[in-house]
Image 1 (tube, rainbow, N blue to C red):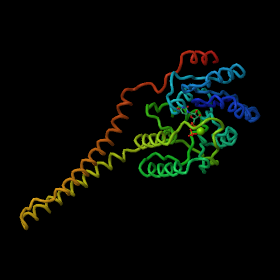
Image 2 (tube, helix red, strand yellow):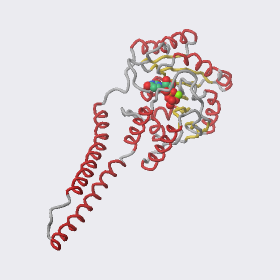
Image 3 (cartoon, rainbow, N blue to C red):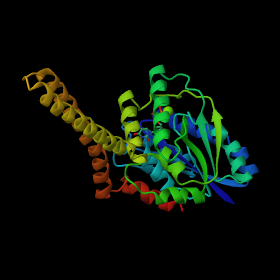
Image 4 (tube, rainbow, N blue to C red):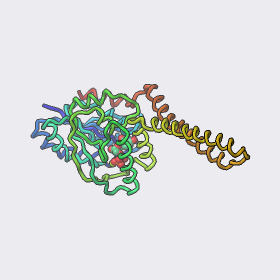
Length: 317
Ligand code: UDP
Ligand code: MG
């Protein structure tokens, strides 16, 4: 019998735990038809509400439910990684707790794996229910990152995907601390089938993403998957250098022809401000890469799970 693991990162999702389980379990006939066993791993990412208790209650009802509980909030990327590490399935699916990733798509995704694809990924083709300004910036972000990054980052791609064990193992080998999963999933390669669906609005609760947290996430993505900003800064330096040469020549020639009346204070100030501004910007860009490098070099664990739950899950083996 093959095993299918479902991984659900949860941060303050108490209302969604049972509801999600109900939706996931609707696939039971499909599991049986295909001779699949399942396990459902909820990763409690340091929730402050009753998420973990809800999952513990669910575990009592269905021993195939498992819980990995973090010591604090480490973020969805870390939660997905922990789930992938804990998973034992031949096929592994990552799904959001809020049902924006409909588990009803699993049979279709499984079908593609049987056809020979290594992973079936999803992308939403509409952004219904999202603030227009957010959609706008999201589109610009995907345009930008795809122009400069060698790894393809698909617009509207969700983290919702079903993977074969081989793909999961490959992802687990990518142990970087600054995890940008959209990039990692695509970076590992393999034959991917894209399934498109309309955006589904979250069931209960609110999104954890504010505009600024998304903006920072986008910047992290760019820093993680492209060194273009560094190149851009270098090119800027070269351009400024040439402008400076031309101006020096111009000033010398003017001095020789017309003498040197002391003037030009305003233009001096403008040039000074522009150039020092650009310098600060460049140092900032380099700083971004340096800070990421610093975090990687520290080589900290991606997450810390509570011991009790680890013991719990080994008992189930
Ligand atoms: N999530 C998480 N840790 C976090 C933030 C979010 O595990 O720090 C989970 C959250 O519980 C949900 C999924 O990641 O299952 C997606 O989060 P959300 O719905 O807030 O993001 P959106 O769908 O708006 O992109
Ligand atoms: Mg959501």
